[in-house]
Image (cartoon, rainbow, N blue to C red):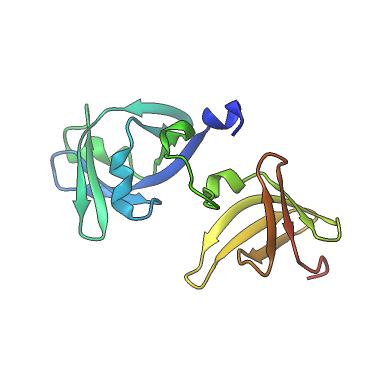
Amino acid sequence: MAAQDEERRIVVGRVAGVFGVKGWVKIYSYTVPSGNILDYAPWQLLLGGNWVTLKRIAGRPHGKGVVAQFEGYDDRAAAATLFDCDIAVMRDQLPDTQGDEIYWADLIGLRVVTVDGIELGVIDHLLETGANDVVVVKGERERLLPYVDQVVREVDLDGGVMRVDWDPEF
């Protein structure tokens, strides 16, 4: 993995609401399982367009989600100012992948090229649909490609390209 990748922020969740009156917030975690977000520290929150490191003083799984409290956010009103803020960690905080595992964040920005060499665009983001994940490719138009073995033939992170078996007219 390139040194620049080690320095990237990876969004791992967002503040989804307030919880109680003592400054706790509900966290929508993008990690699987959701409680894994608590394994990472420090967290950086996107506040007013700037990434700010906040000290998490408490956090725990709660129901199907996670709740947390940050230093300096001691009441409901203060916690409410964090609503809808993205939560990120630095890429080098994540564990190394094993075998053919790939973090979604590592796919963002890859060029997408058909097996016949036709350029389709760049991966903008991915969607979780339940049946299979979907790669959103932005080029001369937006394409939604299923992230399945029949379509995704090769992912070359070092080369910055994903090769797909896909009809460019579709």
